[in-house]
Image 1: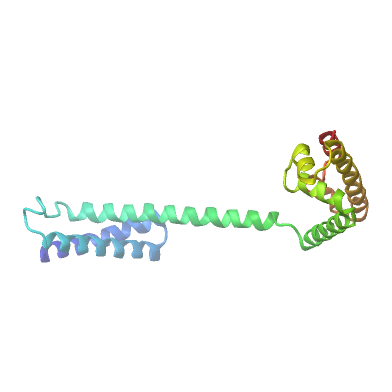
Image 2: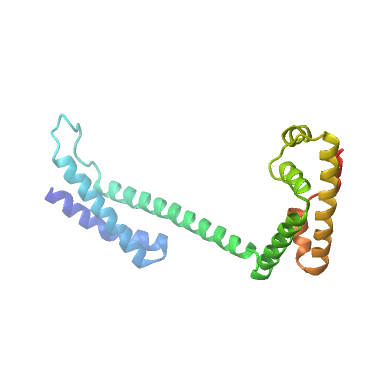
Length: 198
């Protein structure tokens, strides 16, 4: 074991020089070299504790080769971790860059509030039909059956509710400068609703 330690110590400075050249950071190279030395030493101690039957060829054939291989593997693992961290950081920066401004969020809240108010102002049956169709995805036939009205009545309620909501959205578009960005997400699709209703 003493011979192994002496050999590892003899190759330690070579490893550190090589790592410093490759990594171009003497402190990082020293950390990798130290960790490599410790891992090879622990590995050797583990081999020493085994019997020959447990570990055939239980000696390290080339301590220098093992030391350099461990260092190389540590560098690869660390590079992968750094790449993952950099990718995560990049994604976070993109998310923050694409995050809506506080003015945009305030505009969204205002639009939502106005839409809720518009829905609350609808006659109860019209509001119920609209919510069942748009929020819950019921078909005209299912709504008619649930509310015990005809499908034609469901269609009329849908058209009227769509027109009422479209008027509110048109007014919001004229009042809010950023509403243009929200049109695609908040639009009730008046033509689609009218088509669905008939």
